[in-house]
Amino acid sequence: MLTATPLEYFRGPDEGERALRPHLSRWEAYSELTQAMPIRFDLRNWAVVNRHPNPKGSVNCVASVSDAVVPTDQAVVDHPSLPIPPPDSFDQPAPVEILRERWRDVIEFRALPTVEGYFMLTYLESLFGSRAQAAEELRIDRAVLQMLGAITVAPDPFRGRKARGERPRTVRGRVGPVSSEEEHWLVALAQQVMLRLADPQFRSSRLTRGDLPPLD
Image 1 (cartoon, rainbow, N blue to C red):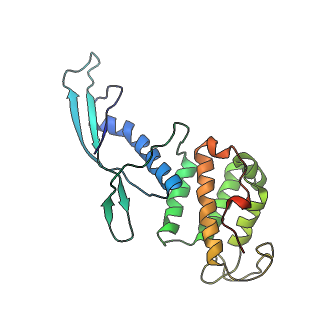
Image 2: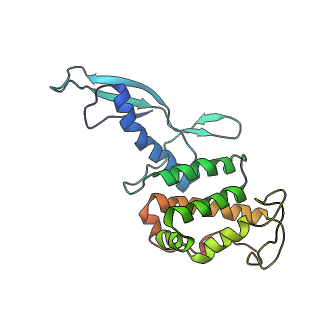
Image 3: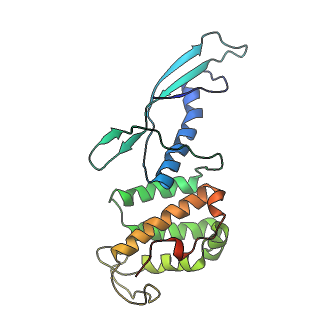
């Protein structure tokens, strides 16, 4: 059981929960992106520990948070230990929240990596103004984003975003359907993109194709 004790007074449990939830959400995001452990913290109860209101009429509450709950393919189980909490530099701005939600559908086999990869590329272009600017701001080699674009426009009736069209020859120097290796590459890249959006520490070095799974 995780217990959160606030450092300031709140007027009641609802106000305390609104203050606590963003911290738990950051922890959930950090665990998912850095430890490949999708978790959810469930708030179980609140306890008023200061029954004498301060002069402003607010009270101090303690929230009891359940152990990290880890979703699996078949069930939801309590994890025996809490994952590492995020550093202060880690945040979950709206772009990270949006991409996490969409890529969770990929991990849970509800969406195609090529579809979400194309959305991610165009979203970054919109967010930063251009593909080149996105590469510069996130410190991602342009060849990586070029590869992202090439894979996500490849025609493939089963794994592709498009059913017809000519596949660019920049992907492994050949024309053909999207491979499972390319799907895994897209997932690995999405994780790196989200980390770079969430924490400037992950932008300390430039991301190159050598940092991602090899494409034979």
